Image (cartoon, rainbow, N blue to C red):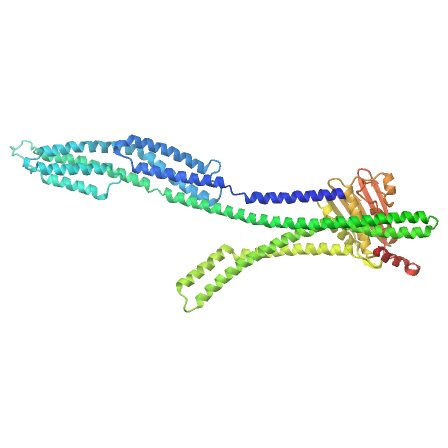
Length: 629
């Protein structure tokens, strides 16, 4: 029994430590380093995306090759950073469906951006090269226009061509030239065109000869060439700017912010869960301290009771030895003293049995009590939420019926009430509250059951004339001993319909508890206890069979002897089965035992329906004496 109790407490301590470790791990479930690493990855992707945009925006005609090389390097770095977000250890993929959706949207956009950059690379190269050639040709044509001008026009033409060259250079090298720049260039070209001399009419030719168009003057031809080159610069630059804007208009920035926001929302939820488990941990630690204080108090009191019982037992033994020595010839007096001592030992053994079961009973009560209290707390919190929803709805209804309430106040109140209703979902909340209260009621019924069984078990009977249901008594004893049985021993009940028996219920409860305890101690590891009850003509029969280690024939013949035990010193008193035998005998019954080593033992109890009445009603008076002892 002591060993089993030690094993039980060891398992209980391991379970308590396991719960503590679990709560500690849950409070540390948020990895701050991984969180910072993920934010850094998001920031790296954003920086590379901005850098790529700047490289496309800040590319110059004179550094075309370098710009392409820089963009290729940035694209490679961005691809690596995207893989870190999507696939590597600690990636964002798989955290929540919202994060996955935001990540997929961003990856699709950035991939389309890559494809656009790749597809337009060759075209941009062609346009840029042609733009360079056209820009290089503009000064030559401008000089030709200046050279072809008359002396009177040359100074004005030189100024206009200088402005054209400046505008062309600015238009070509500016990443996104203003919309008016092309108009300015064309206006300057129109002024040059207006300064050209008129084209001479074609010379008359004879009939039948081919008509030739007169050749343009040199100034007009030079202005036309300058105009063509300028238009090429405008067209090529406009197409390059259109492609750049198409590239920059991809909404990668807002989508990356949406991804970061979704991740931060998830992280805040994880932090909230960790904080909630910190609250649980604090409550659990407080509960453990209370349990330890309670166990310390009970342990100290148990030690005092054991010391007192040992002192009384030692005193009784010494007194008994003195009486045996002093009154050897007075056998009748010695027999009476022995019976008195045996009565005391019966009561002491009963209290010791109850003490052995205290921890188990406490555990059996604490388990349903724990989840009943937890459910009560959840119900209290849910009622607060419902109270808030009702208050919001009542305020909205009041504003709707109030004459001086504005539409904005009514809309705000309705929005708040609807938001609380959508968050709370009253139907599901009420269903959950019903289930929680049902579970709580079930737990309280279990506690009441156990307390009732304990009360029936430990009550002091004043007579043996009570009518008692044997099946109910067996159930009560099984509930008291449940902590010894439930983890490894299966109890198989085969109860038959029984008439009520006239007896002392608490004494029979002690008989059943002692037999169940012995059966549990006889089973090493897992096993079964079979309990069969049936009625016979003059009484009832109770069979208790275990699959334990069994007994040899020599042990079986002595098991009902007082102080006989096969346990080690300090492990048992040897009084349990002796008390069982005496109680059954005093009730006019009989107990038999059969056992096979390695297979198990069977105890058969036969009890009469009625107690025998003796002269002077001695059978009735014996019970109060035993109870008082």
